[in-house]
Length: 140
Image 1: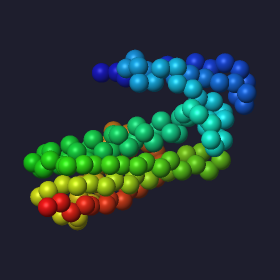
Image 2: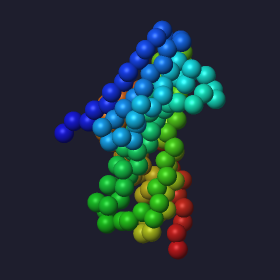
Image 3: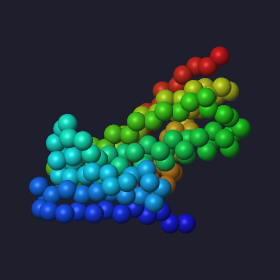
Image 4: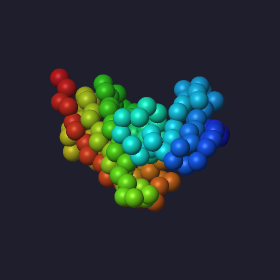
């Protein structure tokens, strides 16, 4: 299996602009630029935001997979991934997940999220610090 994406760029680094497209069509000539990367309030995406989205999705699916293997069915899993940068270096990613699952307690949920933090596919390819926190919602 291979997954692909295409990037197009025209112009200088600071004044140029680009477009990102994926075969699924979810990204279709999606705007990205120096300004969308380093300035606030500009419409468009950037590589770090896309990395955060990819990591949030992968991590959440990994938590879901572990729960499924344990015979549990989560009512909801919601993750926010925050990519930290210093200058032109990505220095870490923090994952914050909230879960609502019957048949499990908070300590078990935290252990599952720590496993997923280390073992989701995106975590495995990154060589930066990754941390996570779990927020467990009690379900009746």
